[in-house]
Length: 269
Image 1 (cartoon, rainbow, N blue to C red):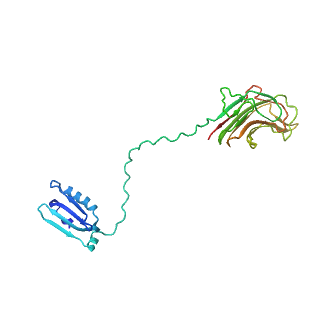
Image 2: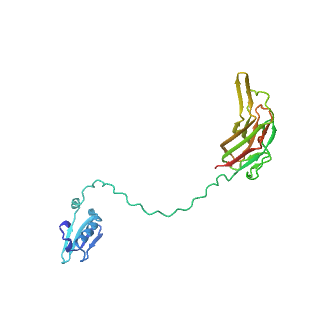
Image 3: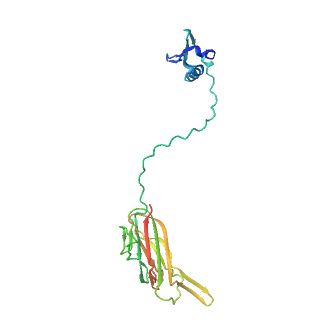
């Protein structure tokens, strides 16, 4: 019926539902045919045909056309649902949204820690914790580090980076070969509450066994470097030790040219 209607002669179209709701489409006389067809198409898309009881069309000449529906009539207008159409093209990217609030300030990386220096410790013959550190510029201190004893008390549980460079020299010429079990070392150790070796480095040993020569001896001058990251708990006490492991030859820690010993600890997280 609507397909056969001359849209230019129509003044108003009214749909009445079974529940008495009404939906109207009114045309202005100056609207052309294309505009009216677009308006009608858009209007009909919003109509729920299953609920339509009556359609009334009023023409400009005063004629009114009425169409009444019964339950069986609606099957004419509503077939089964068709397949879903193809996905449309992606629309243009929208404008950038407003900048979000600034997040919480993160931890200050490496703010906790120290770096200390010993110019020399002479004639060391037994295992000992290195003490008498200096934190004068360019080195630096922290409240948990005791320069006199060389003990560092961990203030906060976290991951810590530990580094050390030890220069040393023997104070006498080597005249006796070392036994097989003699292996001097430098150790960063948790001394409390439970003794634990954290990072270790062996002193370089010359071990030679060739014709007419069998010798095992510590080098007269050497450098040992330690580096590692460890998890420490608040209250742990950490020290830096020389472990003789049977070596009785006196060592000058810091070296003959006063290159010194440097030890640093700082918190990562």
